[in-house]
Length: 196
Image 1 (cartoon, rainbow, N blue to C red):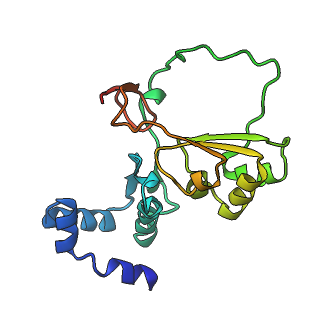
Image 2 (image 1 turned 90 degrees about the vertical axis):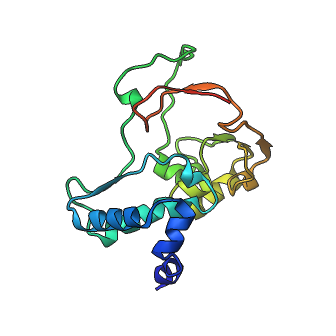
């Protein structure tokens, strides 16, 4: 019922006006996705999940897949894969520092739980960038406990995000519009020059 009341105001006309997508295109895409089986949504997120209400962007795709029966079937579901780094190997610009003793990683889905329980050892410093751990990791309550447990947390972000609110130090960073860079990401088949 909650989803219905949130979706009700978004008529075809209003959605078309907001998105600049013609009404007939919205109708065609909706009908195609609802009737073609199996159907897969390839997210390639575009950073939309890191914006205000961005969790709804990601969640809506899973709701669509669920409502149309496109979950748990071969060739269906939600996919966030592909990219140039899967087609070609790129050497790091700076060679990695030699590790005398390998450091075992913490499983990303268990970050909160493992930090709170000091697995594999206590964490005294946490540097967070390019991720909103409060909104992107499972078990938000445990992640919150982990952020409070670590003695010194640094967040590098261009927004005062829900993660940055738990930081001891917030460092400003440039946005993609302020930096010149070369992008060869996992979500694109292209190597792109990113200009200011």
